[in-house]
Image (cartoon, rainbow, N blue to C red):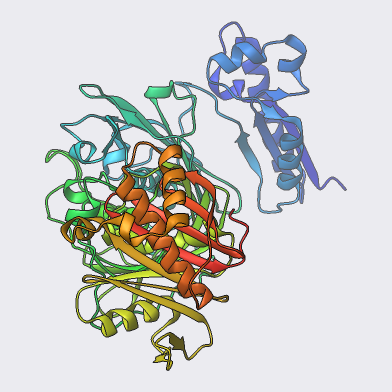
Amino acid sequence: GPLRLFVSFGSLIARTGLPGEAHYALANEWLGALTEEVASRVEGCRALAVDWSVWSGAGMGERLGTLDALARRGIDPIPLDTGLDLLHRLIASPDVSGGLVVTGRYGDAPTLRAEEAELPMLRFLERPRRVVPGVEAVADTVLRADTDPYLEHHEFEGDRLLPAVLGMEAMAQAASVLTGTREHPVLEDLRLTAPVVVGRGEEVTLRAAALALPDGTVRTVLRSSATGFAVDHFTAVLPPPGTPDTGRRVVLPVVPDAPVPVRPDEHLYGRLLFQDGPLRRVGGYRRLTGYDCVADLEEGPGGAWFAHHLPGRLLLGDPGRRDAALHALQACLPGTRLLPVGVERVTILDTASAPALLHARERHAEGGRHVFDLELTGADGAVLERWEGLALNVMGPGPLPVGVELLGPHLDRRAAEVTGVAGVRVAVERGDTQVRRRARAVHRLLGTGVTVRGRPDGRPELSTGDQVSVTHCGAVTMVATAPVPVGVDLVWMPDTVEARVRWDDVLGPEALALRDALADRDPGRGRDEHAAVVWAASEALRKCAGRPGGPMTLRSLDGPWILLDGGGVTVAVHHDGDDVAAVAVRGGDGA
């Protein structure tokens, strides 16, 4: 009479059978029938007949030592703590009664079938391997050049790589089997641990898997036959619907009607950037410094991403535009090669294929890792997607020479690092008049509200109180700002050749001695080049000190960078191809 809860602890074998265990299967079936009888005979009693798969840490499978054999058959044991937690949750759920199964993966059991799931027609769900509706989805897709032509346009140093943006699409497609198609998909804790490499003339099986957790979160992973399915190439988490959007707007000042003189097809693609075809989508820059950028991303050329006989639907929208948003950041650090390794959160608000404007700003940098926040906006200014905490690792040096077109962001990034003086900023402008180039450079660094005034001695002043120095070389202007006195100079080597500069007549004895010391340390360059380095350094030192500089001594020589000491002033000279650029700042440890 007082009995209110009856729970029987049965076995999955009652439903699957097991060779040699017919008697055990029958006994568990009887146990389930007994439970039903108790429920029918005892009024007010809730009865649960729970058929469990094998446990780890306790139970018959543990005592008989069969766990390893079962695991080889694709049967995953339930950890002891997990099993107890599930039992407690079932007991605490008054609406749950009757017979049910609690199991880990149970392999191929022809006598136990979950409800059939109708998979959507999507490229990365080509060969379903396992689908448990609402719980787990695993599917394989064979990648090769004829079915996935984008691989031919994403080749780096001889390796054809699966673009990370298409890896994101594959994980989203696997997750959609469990969640359905979400209106505004969000991916969190995206980790790009190892690239998926598809060799020439080869095919690779890509395995996308998704697992739903009790709180509605879905974990996804990409593995491949190239690594024996033993490596998690990419992983991501899709949070439950309704997770609040905590992203902050990335708003950057843009100089009106003054595009950055960088032509991506000429100055980036084929040199600094390896993407091609439908992935080559950076149209130009409206702002470009060593720490942020605003770039135009073009609409794709049209056509399918996959072979015509394969499903072409994409849940996350245009992967070409999204990839361009990532590799456009490379121009902020043209002296390095960057590799995306992770993202804190990606929020996709509009999947339509259309031109977009990229706004990207570095949040922080440490060691060889740079973390950016970025947004893509449409023609009406609406946010199309937002990336928070995109982590880029430095793989190594970029191609040399950097070139005058990218000299501005390169020096902007490296001048403070090389001199050891925080707050040093550098911009390089081309074309138009000297006055307009100077104003644009200052506005790119400090904002359009800053004015430049001339002092009686000819030195410029800024309305912000920052120190500034300007140099003109032909149609190029270089500007540096800093919280301490600063000086800059720029030499274009072909001009010195054309003018037939005789350095022995231009430089004094101390400068010539420094030139000879540089030539001894770096015999790969000619004496005229070393003379141009000394001249640029002397001019930058003079502007920084406000008077003719004294003798300089050589601190270090590291690739294109020469570091000099000018009596309390640190002079960093960047000699890259035909460009010789010098930045002098008061103090500095020459880091």
